[in-house]
Image 1 (cartoon, helix red, strand yellow):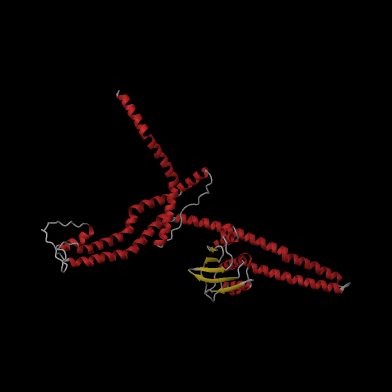
Image 2 (tube, one colour; image 1 turned 90 degrees about the vertical axis):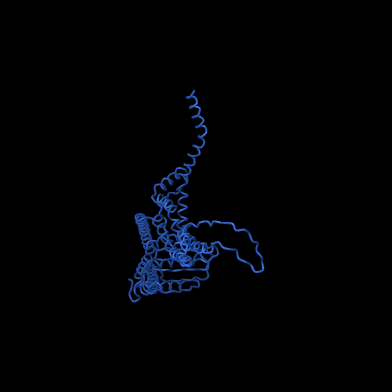
Amino acid sequence: MVLSMLLHDGTADRTTHGPYHTWALVAAALLAATGPVWQRRLTDWTRRLLGRWCGVRIRSPYRPLPVAHGTEQRMLRLGRMLADPATWRDLVWTAVNACGGFLLVLAPVIAVIYGLGALASLHGGSGPPPELPGVPLPTLPPVPVQPAPQAGLAALLTQPWRHGALGLWAVVPLGLALISVALLAAPRLLTGYGRLAAALLGPTREAQLAQRVEHLAITRSDTIDSGAAELRRIERDLHDGAQARLVAMGMTLNAAEQLFESSPQAARALLAEAKQASAKALAELRDLVRGIHPPVLADRGLPDAVHALALDLPLRAQFSGELPGRAPAPVESAGYFAVSELLANVSKHARAQQVWIEIGHTGGALRIVVTDDGHGGADPARGTGLRGLERRLAAFDGVLAVSSPLGGPTIATLEIPCALSSPKTSSS
């Protein structure tokens, strides 16, 4: 009978708690599947918030994840996410922030509240009510009231003086001192809070080196591909342009030589044709050399070379700015051809009436801004030539930012980190 009761109780217990166990397992599975995703969103929001409040820019430390389209790829993405050390450091940050981070930030606030409480306690004593002139007050029998004991830092500051140790006047400077110290310490504590967050939420030294190596490998590959494409372009231009004209000129001279004795007039016409062909071939060679490295860029520097580009545009152009020195030759070349491509896009696609070009050097970087009043809508994400321009600038750690709302204007800003030489020192 006892055994049957135990079996009955066990069955009832499993029947009663079975659904709860099932829901617990489902909740645990959902937490394991979605927890890292929500944790990353929370920490990304924290990084943006710290950048706004503490002035600490925290880069994303996460490894790249595969694009998830199906269930299998989503599981692979989740596994990569769980294998990323940055995911677990996010959990450590959550625990540290819950235990000590908020206390670090709220410490000045608490100190100010205690200081105000200490000052307010000066008026907390008991005494007869104030008498209003011309208003009789009823007289009631006195009722003994025991004042409530003060607690906390306010009591520590005020209770000794209430018993006549130094007098109530000492509470005022102590309360003001507490408030002043809290206000002075608040920015430093907030900065310390941001550094603590950067140490846990930012990439580690090893991760930064790995990201840097990956970035250099990508930019190296892009530079090699760009160089190979440029060599193919030069070869094609030589083959289809100057080489073809030189071959034709040689054939023309050969024909003129054969006609020189029998038909001098025809020979002279062929010689004039060969002369025109040589002039066109020379012009094409000059254009080709100018496309490789413009002479004005080597002789007069980037501002004058960009100004010359602006003067050749078929629309109104306004150029402003100067550089206090010369940038390195590779940087000048990259900046020149970037501006040349941007201006070509403006001429071909923007339907603009005017373009503004501004050049300068701020914050240790060459900065060039190209603005046009066209119809806008330029987007590097659509795989246009702007994407290739971004890759070429990335080889110099440069960046391209494009703002092009529909209807315009389009503002393209490129920055390339570099140091300038002395104005009297050539960069070549």
